[in-house]
Length: 116
Image 1 (cartoon, one colour):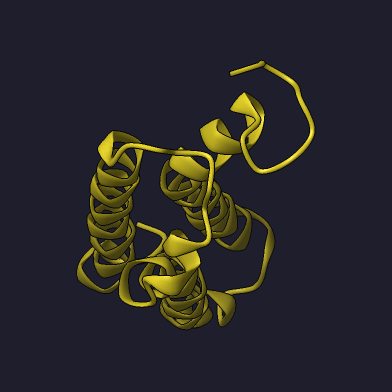
Image 2: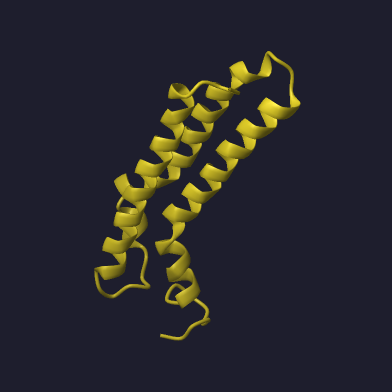
């Protein structure tokens, strides 16, 4: 396997596919806390009521592609970069762990008081 060859078997493409769950989680995590901080610091007193709605929508948007990968196996069947099942199993494990982390972060918006 070459590192940067063109096509579905390239190392960079395989690494991006395996790490798609943690990448989505990192973007979601950053967006949650950035939104929370900016709303609490810079906006009016009525704006914190929007934080749970914004975080709920962001959580659904972050969980959607992960659920799509997990429950639509044809997306993974077209992935020709792995001749063995190890990378597919690793991808599924990271997707499940990322989904748990995304849901955990989204639930915290409804349990913790806003702008305290």
